[in-house]
Length: 193
Length: 77
Image 1 (cartoon, chains in turn purple, brown):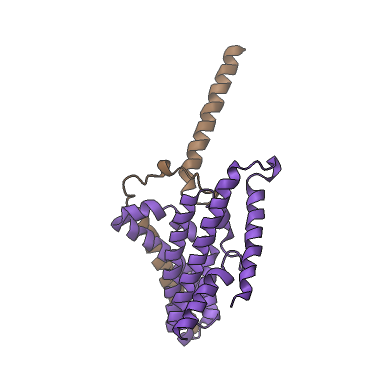
Image 2 (cartoon, one colour; image 1 turned 45 degrees about the vertical axis):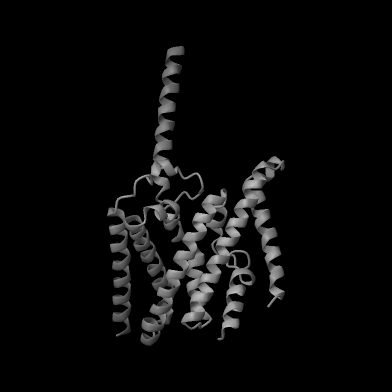
């Protein structure tokens, strides 16, 4: 894959194959942590960090351990354990070395273990048989796409809070309608590449 | 032979997670990141470990309120 194709892959991962709005992975934190834009930024950054790190680890374990031993069918359970373990170590490392970053990301790190987008990306990387560079570009692209949509969604929700909408639509119903409209809008990117 | 590999793999990764969890639990929180200050305002998750102390606090408040209400009721009677 040349440089142009890698850029196309990143673009596709961010907008066309957006993990939240077109693949519907990571919906729970998307709806739960998007009431305030500051929380959304924290969650977005934590997702970028964890998805990239866990994708590198899971890809390496799959191709260096599971595939040579013929244990490909064990990948789901192995990936879940790797992701849970990585999150614990990352949280501990940040607590010790960078309190400022912990203040920003700390609360979101345990929530990421329940974010199925992390496991989803790890499995997609294997199913698409990416090489190392493609895997890194795709993982970063997917996580940046997630961070982008959660931030945009949170800013819309902040404005909706002040809008005169009917009582029965307030809260989760209007949030789901907005997510649906955003999803339809993102489908429009499909024809670009 | 494959069963042995599987057992080793799962045990190793289980240990990796358990050690990570234990060390993380032992590491003190940096100053200013204590849980009550976070107050879980931004998240609806009821299963998150961070929500536990807040739930306990809310339950205690509720019990105190009930006790106060019942005492006031007795006085009125």
